[in-house]
Image 1 (tube, rainbow, N blue to C red):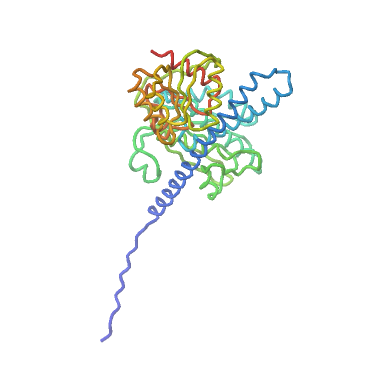
Image 2: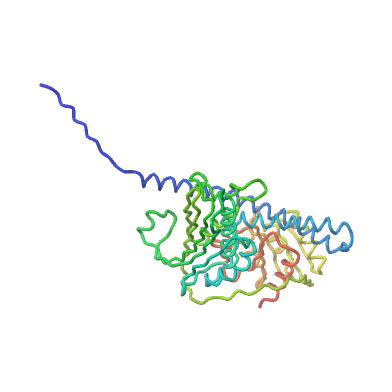
Length: 408
């Protein structure tokens, strides 16, 4: 009797599972890069606070017709360029301090038109298809500007890279509304359900190959020639969108143009806040007593020297533990405590709690390159917290001090 061999074959389609695993791996990689970049940016902020601060101090003491003035001014200009670079890194790593308000996205985009025309060039047409009556979003106005400008500049460069001239060079900016469903999430990893505004920027430029598209959000990755770009434009956009609980997707084919779609949550608040043009910062001194707590020696020395020159009486220590010891030993006549947030031995938040127990009603100003959720949640400052972002200028720190001291 012949033996029969029975083979059972089970087939299972794991295509979607593999796609999800690949997307998860990309997300985890971006998170790791973000942590690294955020730490680097924090350290650079301390360095730049000292470099730019001392340059500002020097300029105030040198006559503008001296050759030394030009040299120091060039140092300061380069330092400010470095600040812009660090802000982009913080944008990607989602450690930028933001002040979100309820805004009309269509109005924000329309207000950028004149600037975009100058940046993009007259040979490229920008078309707008902005859905009327669109619901407001909660966002930092400056971050929205960063997103639109970066996306349009990328579109401009892609159009100019195209090997054959397009019959019509065109960038399209659109807005729309969508209710994201569970079904949508199956093909859009990283999204969340609920009402969203879609911000879309499309171009008829060079497009991208699949291997390029997979890396476009990585910081410092660029297809542009040396000196033509930092590779931080799209990575900054990615970080901003993720910081605000949104999602972003890129659709592109080699030679067929690119579309970037951003899904931004609709605001639950309805009252739209009008943007106000900032006034020129003035250097204003005072005669109050300040306890300045900062672990970075260069930042501390520059800040203390500046404040003393402006008339303030300043005590300085390098961490919270030393500050508490100084207060307990008898230093109670303090008008303002200025403290870094992240320091060895005792950080700024813990110091604030102890100092206010010892000196009821003490006013506190926090300073940091980024806050790492000590007084910020998803980049949004806690209500009522006084904060100044590093690197700060002489004008910024003096203006903030007067603002905090003058508060009731």
